[in-house]
Length: 191
Image (tube, rainbow, N blue to C red):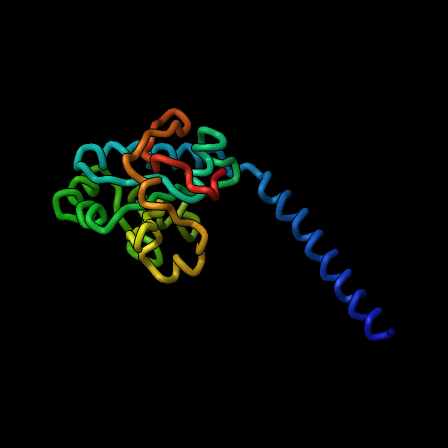
């Protein structure tokens, strides 16, 4: 009986700890990110959308950005970046010499890393890291699913995928004062 009481005591402590963490997590999520950062994100997204239209590059918002567009019509107040997805052929267009030259001419650049990032030149040196950025995730078609191309992204977000017929044709979503491309149907994780 004593062992059983110890187990329930341990279980109660763990649940209490999780409950406290959840309250802290909820409180942190309600914090509003610096509005100046959101202004920079909108500026990045406005240029990126125009760039993609100019060079016929297809993209769609994903992750927290899609969630913000669907639920709020703008960036989620506590979000600190923009998430978009592209198929390999569009990433290749984005990284082509012609597009890279255009990007550089307008004071932006692409950074390779764990995920491809689109930033304003000079911004990556501020605050020991990026101040505002767009994460660009490469996607692939796997059977009837559209999923992350990179295995580390698949492992980190295993439930973030679409059926192929949910993606195209892309549609425009209200996103602050902008309209951006997103999937034709919302992925279940945004509902």
